[in-house]
Amino acid sequence: MILIYCARTFFVQNRISCIDKDDMIYLDNAATSRFKPKCVLDALIFDVTHSANSGRAGHDEAIDKSIRIQKCREYLLSVFGASDEYTLIFTKNCTEALNLAIFGIVKGGERVLTGVNEHNSVLRPLYKLKQEGKISLEIVKTNPLGRIDVKDVEKFATNADILVFGGACNVNGAICDIQSIADYCKNNGKILILDGAQSVPLIPLTLKNSGISMLACPGHKGLHGVQGTGFLIVRKDIKLSPLLYGGTGTFSSDVTPVVEMPDSFEAGTLFSGGIDALRQGAKWSFDNVDKNRKYIDRITKNILHGLHDIGATLYTRDTQTGVVCFNLANADSGYIADKLNEYGICVRGGLHCAPLVHREQGTSFQGAVRASVGCETKEGEIAYFLSVVERLMKGLKS
Image (cartoon, rainbow, N blue to C red):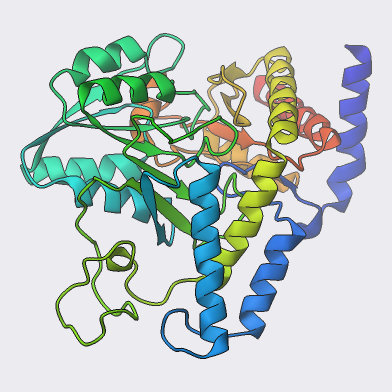
């Protein structure tokens, strides 16, 4: 313990006076991953220096863009085990993918079930539909461990048509047993929309022969792509309505909406460079997922143990996705996040676009501090982070 304290003191004293923007410790990977493999950057540079519009012309450059987009589509379907049963629609982020899934599937009169651990990307579309009288909505609460209990889901799902759940909570990292929920949906004819924003690819997932009807994902988080990319994988028997209408480069002589998938859901110019970079980032992420999963789990446990020793209030139990949620005494989470920023540490305070989670864990007024690690987070950075938190805690007590 003395050695740990001395190490923390050393890190603080040797970093405080020499912090610049390039030296910031990034612990906000749950918002977007900081590390991008070189192959991702190369794909972006190639796209910018070889501008063309996919699907809009027959020249070689335009055809090359279309091929790159299709390669990404095929790779993602393959890596999720979804090649035969599903199709994939590119979106600009996971929020758009979830909106497409939710608004696209609801025709009126459906009964929907979700949980308190969900992000506003799920909750706001559902509450809007509820306010408009188009759906009835039931919310499953968490068990004492902060997780959604599958038995509670099955109990409430008896009268539900559509279930919407995330693989992991963005606030505290709580894991949802999606496999059991998917099995229930498959056996009982329910539609299941999965929000994979915080769980993919660290939590194993396959869509083949599963009960998952749709999977929404961002490109810029665990798949190490860039912002402005996302996708929705949809089972082919699901009938969705598009959110956008416009040019697709196909059936151009017809002014009525295109009905072919995925064209009917990809109106306008796609972010071809981002999509190509997503393929590169996703491939790197899945190729390295076993190593990254073990490392992230280990250093997340180290943070939890360190915060526990400091006396922080902890809200995280599951460590697989690298999210740690905590508070220091009664201090406002925004204040703690600002102080950490002064020490060169990037975290997030507040309510994290997930108000029901905070109501459930009793942090609606105070909010909570979220530190989230990535595959490139260094153990020395964690030691420095803990040393600063310890210093802040002592200041609050004095």
